[in-house]
Length: 133
Image (cartoon, rainbow, N blue to C red; front, side):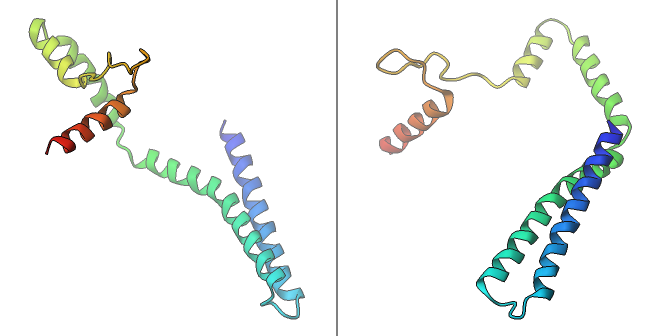
């Protein structure tokens, strides 16, 4: 997997350099750079170079975030999960109920009997509240 990522990054960097080279060639070879055709060609080439540079940039940022994250995160997560298992009886039920948000509007249906999505039902309730005030 690392070799594939390295190959992808190399190909993207080569393509970005190629597009930047095309923009530079357009700049150097044209007599009048500020023409519609040359500005379009250089802007498109520059945009394509930026798009190809996004892939190595995103993998670099992801690797940097992975390196910065502490190694104890996995241990802390495992301890939290184990701690939840130690809660007994009603405390456990209360803890899991607190973790989950209550599902509102789950049984709300429209005039034809179709279920209304929760976000739409929330908007309708919000509009009803505004009409009342």
